[in-house]
Image 1 (cartoon, each protein chain N blue to C red):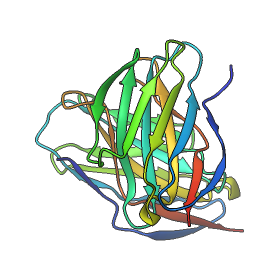
Image 2: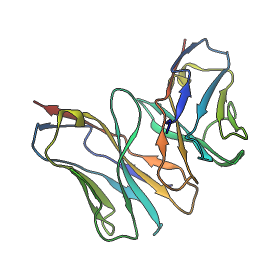
Image 3: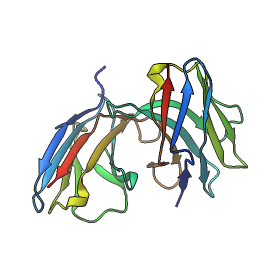
Image 4: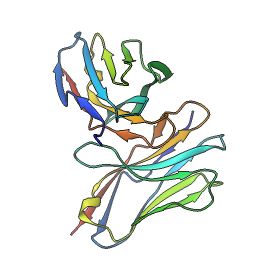
Length: 115
Length: 112
């Protein structure tokens, strides 16, 4: 089964600074998607960014970008110009295209933004 | 466009009872997946329904079941509740189960 590991239970960043959240995964598949989801206190999971494994180019969405290293099975999230509204729990997730469409989630990283 | 709606938002039940949770996906979405979120186990996949058929199932006991109606609304049922079933239950809808998934705000179930 696929596993997703987030080794940083908690992170903090000064407002306007940059922070990087780490994620590694284990899989024997070649086709899959990787995601970062944000879960604020409202509990609703919100998609931050998505990366298709077949794409070599790293995905970017405004202030959010990823560093996808397929060979190393690493998928980190960089948040630039951090804002107070970025404070939330961040989950890294893996989604297979071949063995069902379920998400495999990491344990999450709680991000605090310091004013 | 309305988002994913889960009802109720909060629920308190007694051990041994059963409970039904509801999820209304985004209009046009045919795939509905359910996840259980607990502090100890994190987010775990329960099952996925697509066009009224269960397409995938996670590693949960038979007390957890679900169904999907012709309008794509889905219900999840847990029978003979145990204290360990206390969790946030999240529903996700997507067009075909592969593309971007949209999550509801969840139902917080407390078993006492």
